[in-house]
Structures are given as C-alpha cells and as structure tokens.
Amino acid sequence: MKLPAPLIPGKLVERYKRFMADVELEDGEIVTAHCANPGAMTGLKEPGIQVWLSESDNPKRKLQYSWELARVEGGLVGINTSHPNKIVAEAIEKGLISELGGYDKMQREVKYGQNSRIDILLSRGEESCYVEVKNVHLRRSGTLAEFPDSVTARGAKHLDELAQMVADGDRAVMLYLVQRQDCDRFAIAGDIDPAYKEAYLEAIEAGVEAYCYGCWLTTEDISVSNRIPFALD
Image (cartoon, rainbow, N blue to C red; front, side, top):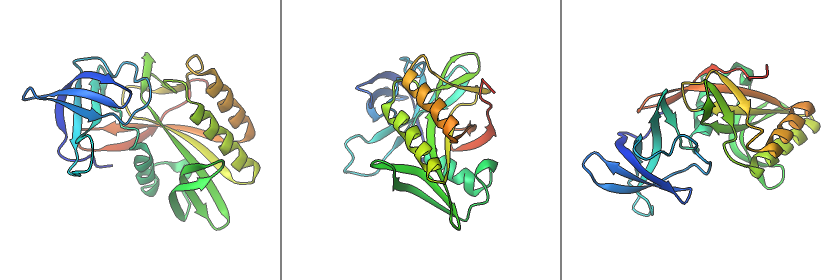
C-alpha cells in the first residue's frame, strides 16, 4: 500500500486525548496531527521519537495532518489503524496470504452480525469467508508482538460474531497484521485484556481460524511480508 506522498518528518512532542498528537516539524513549527489509533500505544508515544505525518488537501478537515509512522529501536512502526484493511486486501489480491487464496470475489465493510461490518468478505460460489483484520503494534519483550494493547470489548465482540459465522456454516478468519519489522512471534496479551483472551480461545474452539502476518515498512509504502507464528504454536 502506497502511503500519501511525500510524508513529512518531525519529532513527537506529545500524544494526548487518544486521537491527537503535537509534532515539531524540521523547521521548528509545532502542528497538531490526528492520531488514528485508539490504543495505549505503549512504547510508541515517547516525546522526541521520530515520526512521519501525511498532509491532507481537504479544506473541510479539522486537522490537516495525520500521524502515519514512528521510528523506535528496531525500526519503523505503522501506527495508523485505518490502513491494515487496505494492506491486507492488496496482499490477498497479490496472492501473498496463501490461507486466503482461491476466492473469486472480495468485498469490504459488509454488514454482518450484530450491527457490525466485516473488514473483508471473500466468496467463491456459495462459499463465504469472513475476515476480521486487527492492527498489531505492541512489543513489550524481545521479539514478541502482542494484541491487544488495551482493553477492547469491541474486539471480543468481533470474535463472538466470527464464531457465529462458523456455526452458520461459513468460514471465519481473524488476521493479525503486525505493522513493524522487529517481531518474529505473536501472542494474545491476556494480562492486558483477560476477556479478549477468553473470547479468542472460545472462538478458536468454535472453529475460527487465526493467522498473523508481518509487514515491510518504508516511508513510501507498507506491504505484507511473512507469516509470523503464534508463541504457543
């Protein structure tokens, strides 16, 4: 997925109110950017870290800039949670996710479940595959990526709805996308959100499939790379 060009480098001053971040640009100007990431962003919001912003030409936008990338020890991290669905959709079209290959049709943001929308719906004839995509950026120890980084009742709800799709005779997949390059294992952070861990285990028991993939990141594009094994595998 191509990132908006050109990205604007700067240094993080402060992330606050969940969806806002002040950034000092290279010329010393301080701007406020939209942070499309509702999570805790542990390790990614330290003042002074290098970040990159995109700039919108939409005059109706309240905030002109959006926070796209951060550089931490280990490399670049994609923090914009509005991108993973597009990244995964492009990867499926290119055949980079073998577990989701062989389908004839792809739809995005299709209504299903209890007032929800599935990120990606794949179909082939009468067969349907419901794919929920979750952005992963948490790394607390070694090279282990984890999800979630904060309590997510919405995430647990999605797992329950995927399990219902399996019960109805369809295929359902939870795909975790690690938007950083310094992780080679993945785990559910049950200490952060025990309810999500329980919902995950129940969904797997019900037949929901779960996969994790990493990304290649540059300041120009983000693309799916290799499959990352679960730490418990």
